[in-house]
Length: 251
Image 1 (cartoon, rainbow, N blue to C red):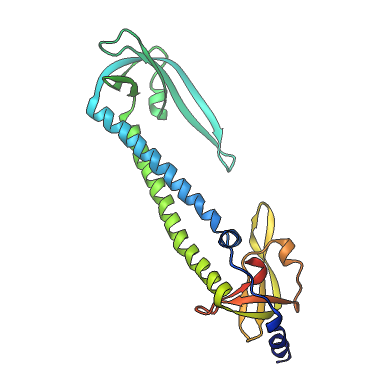
Image 2 (cartoon, helix red, strand yellow):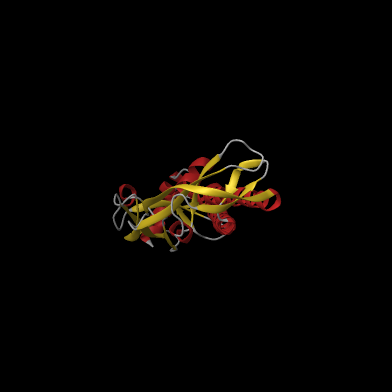
């Protein structure tokens, strides 16, 4: 009760923080929602490009014969440190009606790679009036369409879900800043979270405000959270619709 009376006396002295949309978006971490959107758009573009190539080969493609002139295995490491092998064939052919030869380096499946040697001949499908658009393995091209399409769809669905989630958070914070009650709150706990950002720990500040309502902060950096101790008093804004409290320093 003494804390509530003290806060009531201090409340008129507290100034409302002005609303800044760029600052609000950054402080709420909503800028990171662009990642799945960009991911989804890039993979969707890849799917459409691969599909257009596949359709062109199906519609205008003719079959010929090409000679393997080089083989290559590219070794890469993924984020977990595991090795990943990619197989490439360089082949050369002369399209019907052309005097010049076409040389192409293409990624192929492991089975295709192991099944041929340099100098062997393979069937090739190429667009009759654009022979530089060719493939050794039409099935692999269709697999690329499916892979890029699914990855793009997942990215866009994640972006949509993130946008709905993020809009709710921003709307709540906006209401609190513009129309919510400004209260003082006493810190009751500072909890270290399991996840980190750039190898730096993140913390959550727990409080109880002057109205007796409990609340917690967004994940906070060590500089922001560890400057407090249980018993310290902070300023929070209350969303008049949901009742959620937002820590002033995070908005």
